[in-house]
Image: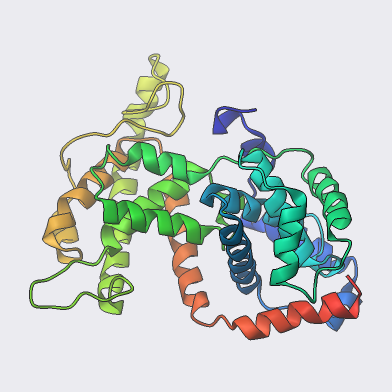
Length: 351
């Protein structure tokens, strides 16, 4: 088992570029274009939302830990990067992925109990020999993932950084929610877990609603106007950090040549994970116009911390853009339509 993400199979074999991922998926569809034309599917993000909902339904019935459900979603993404979805029964695959993830995350569930709950959730899509089929599907999943089953999650990084950034409980809760949401995107196959955790922290800092005396706070979080300002603040913070990191690049290179290692403020032996630094160190007053005064200092310190680190800020920018795009896409999601299109090919092909 790889104790470090940097030595893990996740980093070496399961991190792709967007172009590589698109090419892999297109190749799968090109193998049988007739099948693709016969059974059109919703866009991938809508499928991911639906799969997320079904895994959560199953997990809540069985009292599974959040990390096990997150691991199941990563297994699902890995499997469907190797296998065309129309050739499988997605309900069987997601149930098996959940069962396998529970074993790997040391909260195992009995296969008969899992299959029983799955049949009660999806009676039309689970056959009476579900236990046998789950056993076969488990070996299929393990084979397609080359037995590379250890998943490094962003939750651990978030927990370790909570004290470093003096995060309030509501900020941690919001960052945790952002991490949960990222499993409905391609981000787990594109970026390292610490990058996701840091992006979640930044979004939590700029999007957390502020209770103003005499003014009701929105139940679901920030208002659209506040959310827009928060996104602008996040963009500003990342731009500041990226500019300062680029300016310090020359000095960092000189330090490395003189015997330095991962860069200013870095934790020894952990690439890209710096120690927190104090003060605002050049973060300008532009942020104060975009976030409430109570959080300006936190956002500024976060931007300064990033600038002094070796974190890939471009990756954080991409994560932010992916999440914003996902939230916009989520508004167009139609659960009934997605379910009907999935069930259509499962029934038609007798899967």
